Structure formats: structure tokens, C-alpha cells
Length: 329
Picture (cartoon, rainbow, N blue to C red):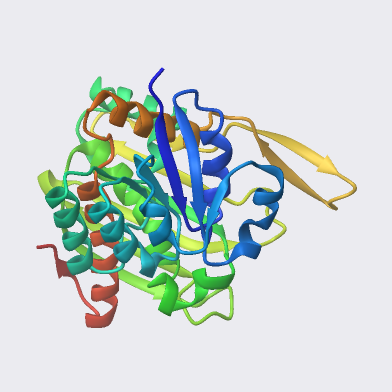
């Protein structure tokens, strides 16, 4: 069996550990090496797994046996790591957001094309059962013509580099808008025409915004509104939510992406919590990435998809600065 040999660049984003666990369960994938400038961050992994470690990811990229890399660094480092990986001839799965500026994302995509490598953006929400069933219902025309959508992506506030604008590039608007923006584009096959947004510092004492309201006008008359925030406190039973209320001419779809939960009441934790039992979205995303590259097919979520989703968040920041609606280019 042909296997895709993978190197992982940076474990700054916690998703990297989840991706690693899922990758070792994928039969036609093999994690060859990991790279992280902070050895302490991956020390536990190195002690329990037989895997090569590199402090400098550029050294790991020189390994001829690596076919592809997965990048889970701080947001501001995505661009340089993607371009270095492309020049080394490695296919790439990059954590969202793809980048923190339009110019750098366009260059990332251009460099990957120049060196003949594929660039995929990590949008695992596409693989959730509720999302897939919503897509099928829309394709069947069950609610007629879509008129408006209200989206939600509300979570608990992260820590560390996520709340440092010099490393993250933004706060809750950048962090949480992109997932819902990608779903809107994918579900409706529509592109944004204009964006209006407002931000707030309502829940936490942070240098970046912890809440936002993003209003999007799509072509063919669809209006969307996203509640994007870090508004869930530590006592909330789950990390957050991804939801869509889709209003059509003949009905309404309410999609709750993480509704597959059990209620758990624990004296040890001192609070109620939800234990998610649903499908493994990261596993299916990674399997799709691996299968596509082995078969020589186009990856299912492109760099262009990542750019378009991030462009909505970046337009939201421009709208906030200008205090008005921004027309998409």
C-alpha cells in the first residue's frame, strides 16, 4: 500500500496534537518527523512516540522521504512556512486562517502553483454530519430559495499567542469568522459582495477583540450575519458551538454542528459538561487530504478557499476601521 509520508511543522496550535493522533490511525499515512522550535511543547510526544524531531523546520524539509507537511504554527508564521515548504516540493495542509493579509495569501498560492504543490486549508467543519446533511437538504431544494442566514461561532477565550495580535493577527473575528464564512461559501456556492462589521471587548481583558458581529451580502441576494465571539465562560459545558439558521422561501433549516453530545454530571469537575460523541471531523479531513494526494487529485479544500474565507474576516476589520460597509474586490 502506498503511504503519504508527512512532516508536521509547529505544535503551537493545539489542533496539531489532535491531527497527530488522527494521522497515526490512517492506514495510508505515516508521520515521518515533527518540527517545533519549542522542544518542551512536544516533549511528551517525543517520550512516548518513536518519531524524529527537528528544532528548525527548514532542516526537516530537506528530508527527501517527506511528501507533505501539516502546518499548525502561529497565524503570522503561516505564510513563510507555506512558501518554504512549497519551495522544498512538499504538499501542504495549513491550519486556518490561511494568512493574516490578502497580499501574503495571494503569494502563498502563487508560490505553491509555481512549485507544483497542492495547498489545502484546514476547514474540518465541512466533514461534520449536520453540515453534510444541511448541504444535501439545500441541494434537494427543501427550503426553496435561501434568503438569509444567521451563523454562530462562539467559544471560550483562548490563551497564549492567540490573544497577542503580533502573533495571531487578530482576535475573535479572525479566529471564528473563517469557519462559518467557509461553510457559507461552500453550502451556497455564492461569493461575498460587501461586509459590514462591529467589534467589542465585552467579556475579557484582552488586547484583541473578544466579540464581533459580521454582516455579509452575498451575490444573488443572500444576506448573512455571523455572531463570532469568545463569549463562553469556563463554566459552560462545552468549548463552544458552530450553528446556522438558514431561512428560505419555503422553510428554515437549523443546523447545530456539535449537537451530538451526552450530558455528564461530575462531582470531580464540579459542573455539568457535554461529552461529544459525534463523527471525527479532523480524521475525515485528514483522510481526504491523504487520499487526494495519493490519487493525484485536487485537494478538497484549496488555498483559494482559505483565502476567500479569510478575506471576509479581513474585510470585517477594514469595515471597523472605516466605520462603514466595505465592498469586496
